[in-house]
Length: 151
Image (cartoon, rainbow, N blue to C red; front, side, top):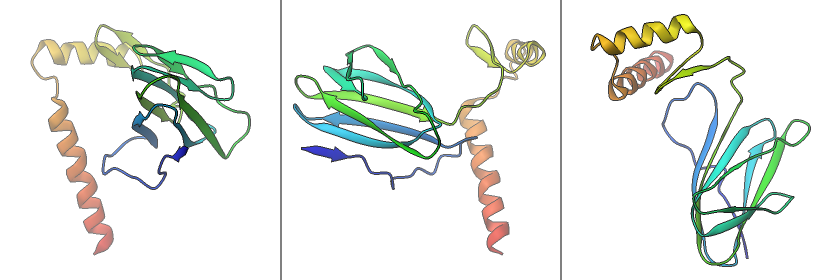
């Protein structure tokens, strides 16, 4: 029996671009259909068992990553995911392409070598921001903007 993933579920997280992140659990023999904008890039990571994905019925097993192809055109698309054998679990991550150049060294990713150097200096000098602080600042800023708009 097909299962339709809910497209109305939202999260209070604040992202730079729209994303879809789903932890999908499939019982043996079930199929899930996830709506995604056709322009999204994405991948699945299978945690348990194996699944068959997409129109080409590509097999992706536990511990493997399956990269999603973008269909031609704009608008909506549908990703079909079928449990291959037993119960399966996977994580789907998809979002709008950024179109920015990226440079990566070690754990850091930046848009330029200049920015990367600044990040390394901040890290070495103990000024590297903590993710919890960044998230709190962004949340507080968004809350203030909503309060201003409601006033």
